[in-house]
Image 1 (cartoon, one colour):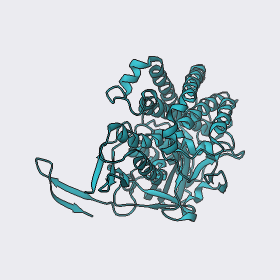
Image 2: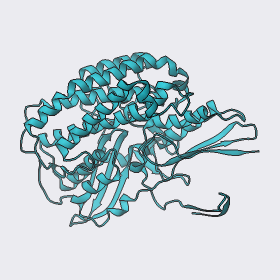
Image 3: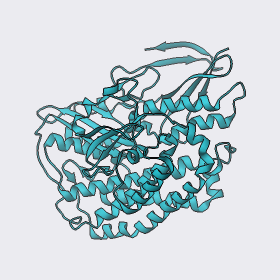
Image 4: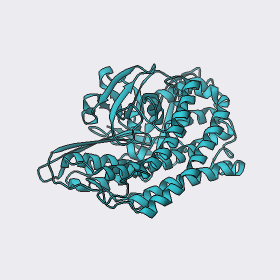
Length: 473
């Protein structure tokens, strides 16, 4: 008899979702899906609002990565105003965004994924959690808390507060950087680097333990997309879009982010509120690609800072020029963090970082604007249209987790087929199906923005949980 396994909810991720796995009468996996079960309607909420309000509204999409939306939204409004922030204003935005990268990567690696890595995927779930981690390895747990705290303090000290900060504004920043704030952040650099390098050393020393998982956790051919600067190095704030295939061949380079709609399409499926984006030249669903830390290290020529470049060289020595297994998001995330810390230091030591000219001002000069940057989970795109008075008429958000949606679904199916066999379903099998989603570190509050008519499934359940009636659209 055919049956269905349901993992609901998926644990240790940001947001609400479930996984369904279909089995045939022999207990073999025939299909699997990653369902996003929450919906956010910010594209509709913002219609009719003055465009200068968009950054502060969009920051409310998520409490984990509000800075990412502030940056992309502010850049889209800059575009509508036809204005560029001053160099200092742009650099302060970069620093805050990198602080966000550090704190979010620390949350993903140390808090959400490390229990599996430390104890093993087969460990007792009563121990395989953040509390068990703190008991087993207190220094590791403290490192995670300290690194995330440092990143959050950067956001608070430069942008006003840790969650939903308000000092990233159209045209640049609302306030210049104080000398004592700069010095306070710089004082934390050595410890932040030490924590990240300890984590890298531990991870590289343990990699042999996860060879089977690395071979089956989203290990398939796909394209990768990220922003790069003029030298082809990683750029989290600006630059051009570059896309490479699984062999490292460049499929497209120096794409103006304002032209992303010419290359990226969006599709919806009835089983999820999360859009699926695809590479238009390859069509849907063949145009699968990945974004985020793994894509950044696969796409760029170098990271662009000394320690991160050295670690990237070791990464490529172990895994090749392009790493295709999504398991290696963990490794790439640590390199991404190391780069962010080094880059923060470089920017803070810039000669004009304390300049008081941090904002450019203008009025509505265009009726359409696009802002693109790199969020912790990958490339983030905000696209707005306004009327002559600057009132928002239309908005579309293309979120990093949406870029990864098809890859996450393919990964779930691959892991389920590898580990789930026959009638004896063990918790460790299902944990691995969940764990492949954690590799991508999805943020579902950010990502669930539907295209077209929203799918709807209403179920009426009896006291015993039996399905009494169902309505679908």
